[in-house]
Amino acid sequence: MDVTIEDAMVHPFVRELVEYGEVKGEAKAVLMILDGRKIQVPFEARRRILACTDQETLKTWIERALVATSVDELFD
Image (cartoon, rainbow, N blue to C red):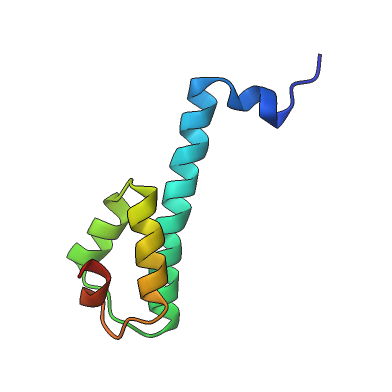
């Protein structure tokens, strides 16, 4: 019997792993955008970004990273 991705997503463990991967990818996207825009990210800010597990917060930070002139503007 073949298992589809949709079938696998029914299992809480698989769903949790997928969500974890999405969160980590979004956090890395924030850092990549800031790096690409040559904005310095201090260690504590980097740690805060990578530790965030709230997808809505990360999406907000991605949007802000596109226009911010400093890392402090992410957290305002």
